[in-house]
Image 1: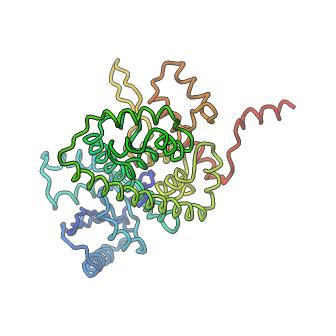
Image 2: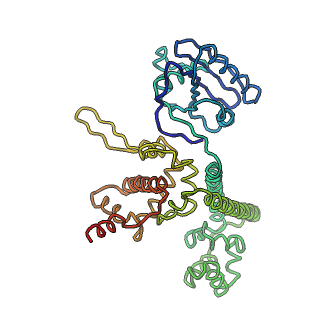
Image 3: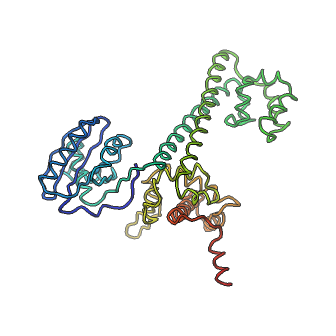
Length: 417
C-alpha cells in the first residue's frame, strides 16, 4: 500500500468516520457520525463473510444518519490490513492511515491514562482522523504493485544471503583461519575456492602454479601470482582444526549450495523487475540520471507507487522520511535532522544512489565536496545529496523528461549567446 502525505481536509458534517484497530485475525471497528452518535467498537474477522457483515453495518449506519461520505482509517500495521483494504478499495470510501505516534500521544489524553484496550484504540484513531492528522492510502496497481513486491522480495533474499555468507565465513575460519585475511570469503573468487578446494590441504595439494592459474581465471585477471602465493603459503602452514572437520565440511557444502540458489533467485527477481520497469511510462526519466540503474529505479517506483500522483516535492520528502525537523526552545537552537518517519527502503535506495552520484564522475560530485568544505559530516552530506536526487527524480518523472547534465550552465550559455 502506498501512503500519500497530504493531510485530510474533507472531514465535515456529512462525513462518517470509521476507525479500525487492525489485528492478525481479529479487527475492531468503530463508527462515529458528526452529531456524536456512534456504534461502539465491535469485532470482525479476516474472512469475506465477516468483511461483508462489517460493510453492511457501515452502509446501514450511514443510511440511518443520512451521511454522504465515508472515511475509513487505521494505524500502520504491516501486512495485516492489506486483505481488508483490498476488499474496501472498490467501495465508495476514502482510505486513510494515521501515525501510531499520534494515537499513542492522544490516547493518554483520553481519560488521562495510558490504558490500552481494543475498545479504546478505535475511538482514539477516530479522534486523530477528525483532527485531520491522517494520510491518504493509495493501493498501488499494475506494474508498480509488482515492483513493490519484487523489491521487497529482493531485500529479503539479500538479507538471507548475507546471513548465510556470515555463517560460511565462521565455518571457514575454523578450518582455515588464514583464508579471510588473504581473500574476502564473500567474493566470487573466494566462493569458487571454498566450493571446490575447501580445506587448506586441498589448496596446498594443487601446487603453486596450478593455484595461480585457477585464481587468475576465476578472478578474471584481478588476482595474480602474488595473491596465489600468499594463499599457498598460508595453506601450507595453516593452524586450522582437524577434529570434527568432516562435519564442518558437510555444512559448508550445504551453505554454498544455498547461497548459489539464493544468487539465482536474486538474478531472477532482477530480470522480473527490469521487465515490469519497462512498463512504467516514465522509467526512462529515472534511468537517464547517471548513477541510477534499473534496480534502484524499479525499487523507487515500487516504493512510491506513482510519482505523478504527488503534487509537491514536500509530499515526496515526507513519504521517504527525508523531511527536515528541528527541536528548538528559547535560546537553544536545535540541529535540523531528517524525520525518518517514511519508507525506510526508499531512503536506503536514495542513499546508495547518492554514493554513486558523488563519485569523481558523478552528477553530484561538486555539490557534495562543497558541503564537505563547509565542514558538513559525510553522512549528513550524503543525506543532503539524497534529498537533491529525490527532487530531480520527482521533477523528471512529473514532466516525463530526460536528465540533462549541467543543464543550468548550458542554458546560461544559450541565453548569453
